[in-house]
Length: 121
Image 1 (tube, rainbow, N blue to C red):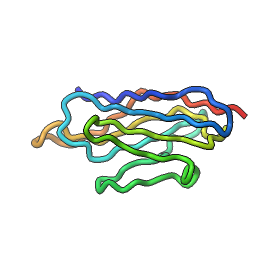
Image 2: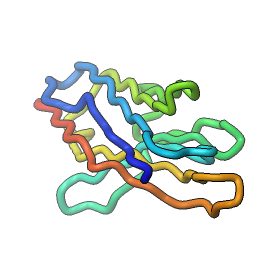
Image 3: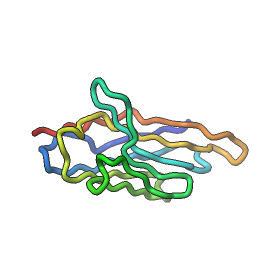
Image 4: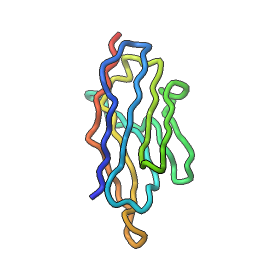
């Protein structure tokens, strides 16, 4: 079984920083894509930042220049460094990955349990 476990959320004042981590564990042949999504109360889940199949990074306009996504392939771990946080960044942040468990297997989408980020004004 594959699991994605996020960590690093918390409460921070506006202008502060946080670093989120997402570790993928289990039997993994290849991670095709990885990304961070967030969902604020009453709003739809949205992409924050991610890696495409070609390893290209993409960012939502609202976080571009403030958030940086990175990954450690050896550890199957992805990070999201967030600076200059704003109250509107408050949300539950989810890790997502499309993973193939074996060379003969199909790709599947996995989600973490989410980590709360709260930015106070």
